[in-house]
Image (tube, rainbow, N blue to C red; front, top):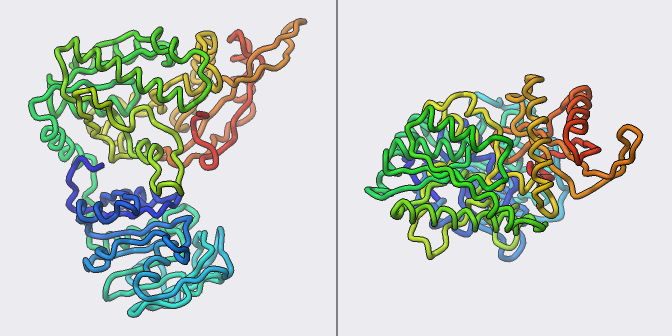
Length: 520
């Protein structure tokens, strides 16, 4: 998974927690690079990364169950700092000679931690004798400590809520410091990586840029690269980074699959040809894509079909160019995470991303994915580092499958035309209200539902449109945007008046989790 070398890395072993990625985020926010590996490949990941510290995540598993996940023994033998979180604490105790039991009082949600002893983990943050809010989510609990450990914090449901072996620099907490509901959690994680592990804040975009350019050159050599340019910030940043590394060996290809927003293809082409001296080919493949998707209702089949056709188009274009050795994509860390079941049968693939999963064997191209280690906000920071205009960096995400996944049920040309017009009006209203930059992502969804309406004196039977807008940092979690009703009413009225085929508009107030940001 890693493309670049980071000498000071924190390895996070994922036991299947829903919030493991937040640990990675908090560590990176502290200026230290982190990488997540699933527990099944933790031993290999530990050897490959050679981390300066390890964090063990939470888990839906129970350490008392036969076959439940464990951390590699090698990390405890390496003499490096280790921090266990929730299940991670229980795994430490189970593996190092303590005891974990099920059936005790469970703690879920807000709890209060009493600081019983001073500890390096709490230095400068929490003093002995004070009480602090934390977030708990556990059913099992530690009932006996391994040799060398002492209790440094307790809660009502967890008498071993924070433990420490200061000599070996092994620490563990029953609560979740990575979530915002533990207000001082980010400080605790920063304390662990800086003061305990002794790591510097050298994870910057300038450093990443330099490392990534070097890594691309080593990977590509004198080979030719074609880049799948979608018009979004991810593929654009990837293109500029690769161009910096290999210059004219890069050719960008923008495939207009007929699923883009209104006038999007033309705007992207204009920006790249006007501002950047990059070879860019525009391929109109809209008929090919839409014909293959027409009538298809299954969201996974839509994504797989789009992914397959993208590959076919790029294969054809590469032949026209005389061949290419590499295909570049703007794949991000969350794309990889959501497309892979980290813990086998016990964890779910959220959705397949059209650009994750490798290339067919028949293609003589290898993948270049320079953003595969980054979260969305990190990509935007890299875009600024590379000189992309702010208006472009701040664009809302627009997934590769485009309007096809905003059209639940069967895709038709008529539905796509309705969706495109409604989407343009919605975004126009958001911009006019000065809300575009306050929202992470906004779009419309054409529902496979028709309802009765009244227009003038006549009866209508037309589609229902859902408006979606969320706030987020990296797309892993999101909250719906809290519009005032006046805005929603005005946007709905304009859409219904101007777009033939829609007679009802609703607003989606689902956060992620439990929903996804997109509807499919």
